[in-house]
Amino acid sequence: MPVLGNYLAVIFIWSTTPLAIKISNSGLSAFASVALRMVLAFVLTAIVIAMIKHSAGLKRRHWPLYAVSSLGLFPNMLVVYLAANYIPSGLISVMFAMTPIASGLFAARLLGEPFLVARKMLALLVALCGLTMIFLEQAQLGLDAIFGIGLMALSVVIFSLSQVGSKYLQQRYSAEPLEQTFGALTFAIPGFVVSWYVFDGAVPTVFEASSLWAVIYLAVIGSLLGFAAYFSILQQLPVALVSVIPLVTPMLALWLGVVVLNESISLPLVLGSVLILSALAGYDGTLVSRVQGYAGKLIRR
Image 1 (cartoon, rainbow, N blue to C red):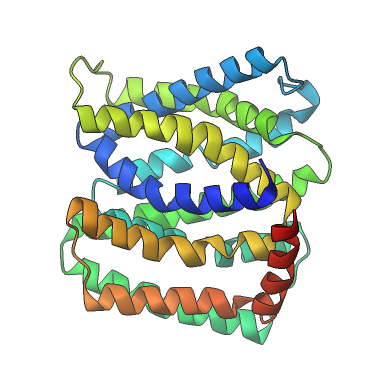
Image 2: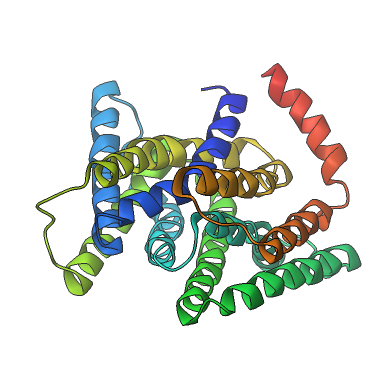
């Protein structure tokens, strides 16, 4: 798939994933839902690799890359699934929009990228103000909402560490996107299965149609295609352009939550979201001009 196609696919998938997670959790426990999704994704990825006889099989020398990439799946995705039991799908996407700033903190350490500059510190302050506004509004809903926000904050940290670590190791190990997807799933699957067995252990015998279709969608589109597309653009595009995606997905996710699940949107949530997204836009002072330049190259590809 062309780079532009992968880029647009990631935007679509990330916008719909929180909604699909909420739907899948409606008929299954979070542990069963995410474990079933990842097992299906693993099997499908293995079948695809076997059918095309591709050189995307696991390579022992790439194990460090697989291990770091798998953190974005386990425990990260389990944390997101648990958070979906406590907060709306749109808020999950808004919280996830903090990822670029968190990634900047890790990139400063691992990749040597500058962070302690006035512009980035101001962006961090604005984002924290928006997050505080959302937190105070959600806190009025009770401890469940606070717990959900805390889980998503943990998810942002884990995913950001995985993203920056993967980018760092990709400079040393040249793994194709499908191989990296399969490797990450291979390393993550045991964690999902053990977590389900320890904290749930109930084998689902009856599935709600909507929940089952959501799991299938997340396995095929969200995992197999989504992970491959994400690892592809992470390899081929600058971090600045990849970081634009969280600017787009929260608004789409909020809209989908209202239309499909009849979720409510409060004024503090909207204002807090605007502050967070504004902070992301100003995080890189050259973001707009760089995105315009890369977008032109992207379209020509």
